[in-house]
Image (cartoon, rainbow, N blue to C red):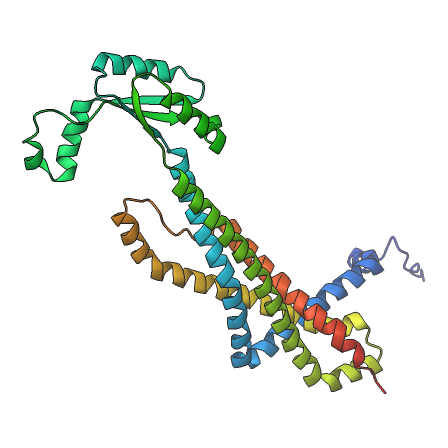
Length: 336
């Protein structure tokens, strides 16, 4: 009787061989990486569950972080809006040149051409005295009183727009001096002092806001650190057991760092919510006030990049506070 030859690798079933080959293809490095990532996911979920089980304490910490983050960010948004409006005013600043009463319309047109050839002048507009009187008659509400005038008391006026290079204090002073010395000019008026004062005030407020932001950031880190310290004390026995069975410092530290990350994420979301509520509450009065002054001022919210930056900074603050607390207090928890 013919006997069957023994099974060889070539005559075996290819499926089990492929399965064994797939198992052998998984290198120890890959297995270690998968185990590492699986443990991180497990720790992150467990940290989130612990916060969810204590909603009142977690919400209080998130609210403190949200207020501390929303306050400087809101003030920075306000300053950014103010600086944008002042930049628009500065770019539209013009020098008003009042001509002498003896200057005729043809002479005013000649002066307009002469001033327009200057290198530090971008544009010159001539306002005829009759057109100025007609506009004043419509806007002043003194139409009946102006009918009693025999002559037009308003002079020809030049509206001079400086070039971009001359919109500095020295450039404006040089332009005003040259225009004042021009023949046929009675008065030159430019009032940028209030704008300079506004810029100085906004710069001072900007530095104050950054100082406040630094102080509140330190406060946020301290709040997170104190919260993590309390969590370490409440889990002291668990930490001791983990160290007795050979748990490394990184293994023991990891849950508290993830707790800090969750605190930071929640604080950033609360800060965004507070900012949106505040902008919605103030947008109506601000628009009405800007309309009374014929200004296009408006409060601008955070852009998408700003939202991402706020969330990222909040998470970093939470992680940093947790890391400092763990570094200081976890090392003191050692099995006796």
